[in-house]
Image (tube, rainbow, N blue to C red; front, side, top):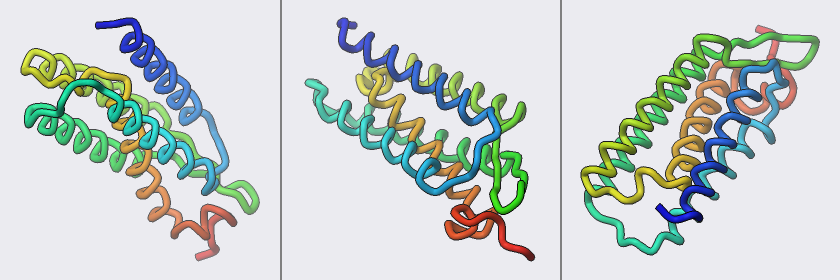
Length: 163
């Protein structure tokens, strides 16, 4: 691995740690924050992957697809497990201990996929771009489930609707 790949992986790991810390803390559920972060991570991941010199093989596509599927499923589970609290007219959220356990499990699965993919000849599976893309996909699925749980994006912007 060259130095730029190691730097990309270190940055990706730093972003993962920051996002986990943020999601473990009670935070207001706001549209800009919950959609902006995942979309930004997906965009950065795709841009980083686009700049790779290697050609994309069928093995890369299979491992990338499996990794994204695992990330999306994990995000949906985490969205269902996220703790919600109404404080006045705002909704606050955090993933809690169970959500953290799911995230750690996802990181382990992602790491295992990266190692297996590397030995199978998939060059995309261990790069920082793939990690950021997977994290962004995970957070997008989490956000979609949260949005459905609270009644859509209007409920997120203005607090939970009275039911």
